[in-house]
Image 1 (spheres, rainbow, N blue to C red):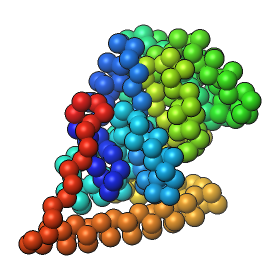
Image 2: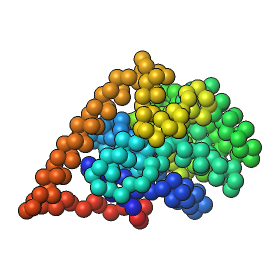
Image 3: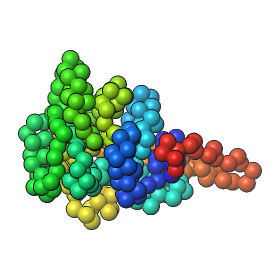
Image 4: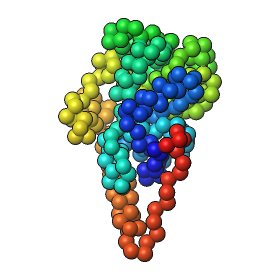
Length: 264
């Protein structure tokens, strides 16, 4: 079911439902584009209309971050769980190995990508990759990358490039890639390769994964999270105050969300 969270589309789907939609796309060869929404991306969308349009044009917008999940619940949406990019990647690699679908990895460095693929093969010996390419290609090489993906016959494409670069890449080339299921995975290749450790489960449940990332990479992450988390909190509080005013007697009701792109 598609809903509107502070003017941003989100799909209220479980992990099982999302996996089944991806599986159906790969079986039918009908394109389905997935995007994982976290607080950082949500905040960037507020000042980047091109990124906002790219997200809105995606077929599935999953709740990735705990901040988005809690925020959706706070404004009254029936959000029950999140579908994180790294967990969805793991689930879909298992589906690929079991059903013979071939993934393509795009992003990260060559070393990280090779290690991620090797670990995926160890976990799923029957897994066959359609291809791979690191994320450090130059603009003039972009057409070659698109050509390689298209000729690979991949059933799914996982892109580990930063926002908004991956969104711009997909907006420009998704019609030419010939891949039925496409999703951005953020830093999931680093986690799969073991170069970045994921937060323990209890820390994930507490919504403190961002703090764990700062602990691992303080120089790169502290300002990003300090800025985006503060801005998000301000946006959410403002929305809750506005919602409370609208629910006073005589105030107009909220505008219903638009239609879902996935028929929900």
